[in-house]
Image (cartoon, rainbow, N blue to C red; front, side, top):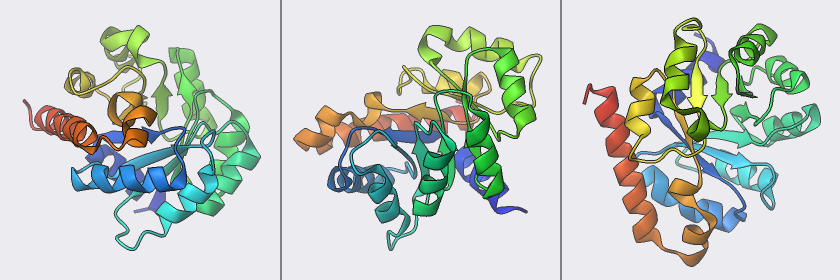
Length: 217
C-alpha cells in the first residue's frame, strides 16, 4: 500500500474536506481545533490566504497528528512544491494545470485539479491526477455528478462549491468520493467573530449528514 493510497483512503473515510480561506495562522488553528473535535479531520488551506505556507507548516506539526492536510488554490508548479515542502499531503486546484499534476507525482503527493467537463476529467486522470475537483458543484448539480459517473466510474469526484449539511448526503449518494466545503462550514466571518457555537453546530450537522449517507441513510 502506497503512502498516496493511504492519503486517498483517509479522505474517502472522512467524506469532507473543510476549506479554510482568508484566515491567519491563529484563526486557522482555532477553527481546526473545533472541526477535529467534531470529526472533520481533512483540512484544506488555500494558498491565497495570509501566511498560508506557515499555516500549513504549523498544522503539519501539530502534536496530535490527526489532521489530513492539503493545500488549495494551487496554480503553478512552484506553489505546489512549496506547499509539499511545508507539509501538505495533497494538492487541490480550481483549474487543470499539467505542471501542478507533474509536481505532485514527482513528490508522491496526490493532486485534485478542478474540472467542469467529462473531457477535462478524463484528461486530468490521464495526466496523473488522483481525483478531480468538480467545480463549481452548485450550478452543475447532482444530475451532473450522476451523469459523469455513468461513463467514467473510474474517476474519483470531489464536488466543491455550494454544498452544506442539507445536500451533502445527496452528493455522496450520487457517487462523490468526498466533498469540498468552504464558507458554508467555516467562513471568515464566523471564525473571525469567534462564533464557535455556530461553527460547531455546522460541523456536527455536516458530520451527521455524511455518516448517514455512508451508512445507507
